[in-house]
Length: 461
Image (tube, rainbow, N blue to C red; front, top):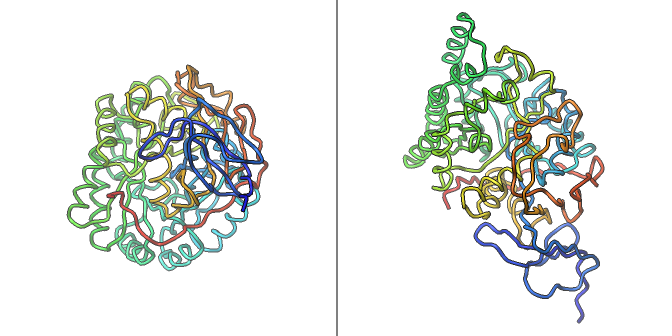
């Protein structure tokens, strides 16, 4: 019996988590990968010849804030930028304007907006209210939340509250029953508030004071607190963003004691330093802040040693006017990072002589595993969604003008950075979203992706 041709075949150098297949191919039928091979191409209705280019799994960004600035209207632009950046699945945080995603009803409303406006697929975090929200946890898990997010630091009592210790213990117990991961914004509020007040009182509001008032100790104190509660409750507790390698050491020490403790790195903590904060001013402000060049090296050592869960962006597209001014404390905290994720991550690996397999592993596969989206997402494998990132190697410069988002968010801390590759094409479930110049997908091309299972993954395999 003659086999029907595949819908499409993509040809190029395939980056798998453990190896690179030179001049290989990905055959797509419907929305999924039907075959992976090398040599002569099989019959197909369409052939995309990317010979000499690098094909990776579409990136899975495990940490982004589409709706912190303008609410759910931000989903469209942020996911358009994702499509142009080779990010085919976004895991979106719940701290939205004007209300956080704290129950199944709000969650369902956000799912509708995702399905009608997103350009790429989107998984969603859930959270709880400052008080009395623990009973909504089971409903959020049933609605398809991939993970939960809580905070040890308060940015807004309604949208981004600090959860007190008794409530956190109760919440962790309920989340443990769901099998889902709970990520924490990990900064000690008392220490940060005191240091910030002292800096302002002395008239020090220049950029470096953002780092000085949020020292590594503020992170590690919070890490110890959340992991202790995790040990008590049995919850899988995850550092949402560690800017210091000690955070991963602490997580590892708790795992050695039987805890379910992990932590992620954001791309900026693998390349940005305090000097960049001084240079960029408000456009380099994020929480936690950039650290020293020595800390960047320690972060890389932790990644190569397998201590890091995955790498994310913490994309938070604040409008440009929120990042201006001489008072660093008055500037909004958060970076754009969606469209720069792939070219910068790729370049960092090339510059350090590290294999591109680390990009497939820490930028896609492990992220999908931690959020219960694997094997549907995060891998070039038969049966997975045909989500593919195509990188064209060469000497390029990242230009914020190419960012595919609202005009006021077309800025980047990586503007002007030399990069070793550009995103030449993006495919989502077999459909081309980006051709290197323009977003081809319409709003609503993306879909909400519920968590696929309740199995917890700690990254220790």
